[in-house]
Length: 100
Image (cartoon, rainbow, N blue to C red; front, side, top):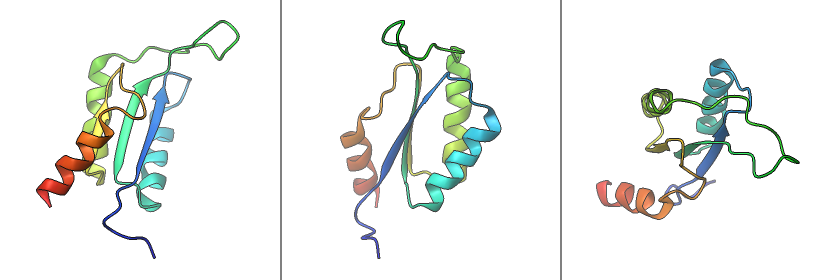
């Protein structure tokens, strides 16, 4: 049994050709696994030897995905082109604990 005082977080890098329906499915899977905090950021290829960016998402799309994630049940979401996996994780966790 999982200790409900321990928050879990996952992060996704976007722009590799994923479809909207796939993202929603991943959100559902993460929630089903007990994940409560989500970060969504833009994948940036570190070099020509790495996967190439398929698409740069506009800020409005990150905002829409953030809204969807909250409506689905995530307690904290950071979503934007420059968001990375550990993006303000400590602050997001503390904010939730202070609201509880």
